[in-house]
Figure 1 (cartoon, protein in one colour):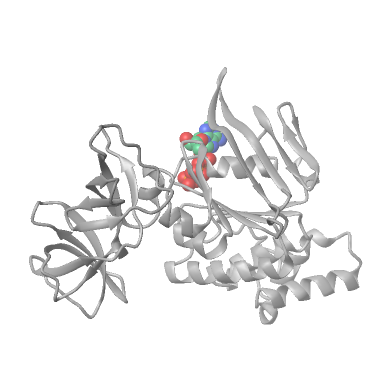
Figure 2: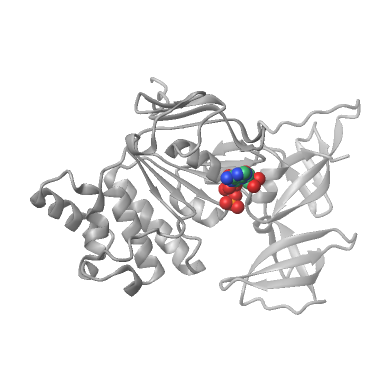
Length: 365
Ligand SMILES: Nc1ncnc2c1ncn2[C@@H]1O[C@H](COP(=O)(O)OP(=O)(O)OP(=O)(O)O)[C@@H](O)[C@H]1O
């Protein structure tokens, strides 16, 4: 059987460095960042405020030039140091956080704005198709101020998609919307982009948004991508402590690797080392102190368990409580527990481990 070949890159962002001019100096904020997308793939740059996500997006859109590296889209070189194709020649659409709709134009005219090269029949067909796709056919004659935030963002999406861009950039598009609507709209947007086969990049600091929309996610820290991966792998196989901390909820708990038995022993019990876990034993006793990542779903509540932990904090999450628990040693951990188990702060509850693999990191000095 032939091994599957990796999809060829449609967008290639190769070792780009980007900075902002400050008087005579350039303050570099993106340091040799690389990733690529196949045609029709949805990527996401996810990271904390100030890590450089928007700067990367602006460089791809052509609003910032490169200090080094290059950006290639569908075989066309868009940017390299000293050469920046103007934004309007790139066939790249952008959806901004604040919608940026034309207030004096109706929904229909906003969407049709970039289609003046089409004849009236083609233009009408295209706008009507997009209106139907974003579920706003009955709002065509309304003005932006007559729509909700979610509806306005759908108009902005339809307007950006109307000229059939080679690449769509979405800059924190849901951040002005309430939490429930955000995830719902993110899923809807994913369906729309997949139906059209549009290659897209979302920038966000919200992991739920990233998980809902993207095929591949790059976690950014200080101007570089520290892990480019699926949502599943970012959560279950974080490449370093920063990713482990940024994605999902969990704690680092001390453990000792028992290499001959392929176990890691922690206060709660023993966990199997999974194959491929990179544990470097530096002493001759075949054991090593490590920090073990324990996710909130690795610890389950069990009334029968002899292992007791004290509830020190609780946060209601609808279907679940996120409990912060204290072990007899004082070590704290997190546990997601179905919300019909409503325990008081200070109460002791039975817990046990339910992790099928373990992620370890070297102990921080
Ligand atoms: N026009 C500018 N001039 C100078 N510095 C800038 C400019 N825009 C951004 N920066 C700086 O570049 C760094 C990265 O900013 P950027 O907006 O790319 O981050 P971000 O990850 O998108 O953050 P956020 O999530 O808060 O939007 C920050 O330190 C910021 O202060």
